[in-house]
Amino acid sequence: MTKRGGALSPAVGSAPGGALIGRARMGSPGLANALLLTTSLQPVEITPVSISKMKRILVTGGAGFLGSHLCDRLVEQGHDVVCPDNFFTSQKSNVAHLLNKPNFELIRHDITHPYWLEVDEIYNLACPASPIHYQWNPIKTMKCSVLGAINMLGLAKRTRGRIMHASTSEIYGDPEVHPQPESYRGNVNPIGPRACYDEGKRAAETLMFDYHRVNKVDVRVVRIFNTYGPRMHPYDGRVVSNFIRQALTGQDITIFGDGSQTRSFCYVDDLIEGFIRMMNNTEGFIGPVNLGNPGEFTIRQLAEIVIELSGSRSEIISHPPVADDPKQRQPDISLAKQKLGWEPTVPLREGLQRTIEYFRSIDIDSFRAPTPNY
Ligand code: NAD
Ligand code: UDP
Image (cartoon, rainbow, N blue to C red; front, side, top):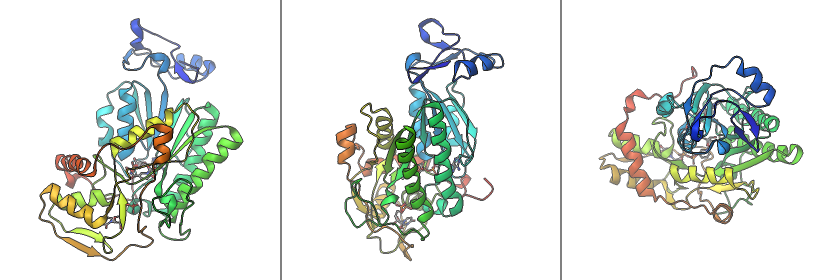
């Protein structure tokens, strides 16, 4: 393959109807020629997108909760998907069903180190996302956000690829403006326990925009609000996975503080649609853009709904509040509606029902909380 018109196009072995292509590693013609000598060509079947539209897409953190759903969509569309992940907060089972697909590659790699490949697009998702995960090794979390962003931006710069970065509503901190529009600059404690994540993500946004201004890198920034769904790690400590796991195993449902704090929960399928629209928008809209479901619930309401939907007999109990816990959070998604024609479609009860079904289908005991030995 050689790189042409922003997409990787085949240099070798196109079969009738474009359905079969040779699988060689590519980039510049010189690199392709060099690699043709060493790469065995096996015919593989690629159907849904025409080869001229097929892209090489890197999804960092692609074995994680959101990343695995994104990989599903991109592989289904027929793109050549490469997924570097260090499995800190995920497991291969999230993408096991993709491993036999010819257009999917899973690679153990830590994005704090550079990665060399010819790509058209990068979705930069690699980062521990739940508070207990990102506070496990806060220095590594900051390195992942900052060094990871620098490494992926360097790759995008060299390949002239487009990069979409997964930022977060956490950049608004404990917000004093409600709901939060993209113009709100936030209220983050720079030295608190959440700062490794919040400030890391803020620095990554800064890097995205500086590489865009200075090096003309084609960036996209999405600010994700609490998203839930199948393939959340049962022990990631996030509120939806905790409450469902507790409800299904008959444990007490643990509310931190009085449960009056609010969050707005987006179902994963809706979010992934937002990712795809943001990456592919042709107006050059780079963001940042909020992606989330504006439906706002207190944490106590969430606990009650999970108990009701799961038919659990678990009791709700209170634990002491956690430090710097934002009291309220709700996305203003006017910009996403206007620029991307995007808004969520799955109501909380329906999404929770699907997530509960997923948790019923897995062996929760086979999952473990993260260890330093990943
Ligand atoms: P997740 O923990 O399930 O996925 C993160 C993935 O990144 C995992 O597979 C993990 O092993 C991998 N990873 C972590 N550090 C890495 C490193 N140094 N190198 C390579 N891989 C690494 O979390 P998620 O919910 O899927 O989140 C994905 C992205 O979306 C994260 O960047 C997160 O900050 C962002 N985000 C998620 C939410 C949400 O509600 N799910 C909200 C805001 C932002
Ligand atoms: N939370 C809770 N019990 C739990 C886990 C979380 O009450 O078992 C609360 C937490 O204190 C926060 C909210 O639920 O107010 C959302 O927490 P989560 O970790 O899911 O995400 P984030 O705080 O990053 O939005």
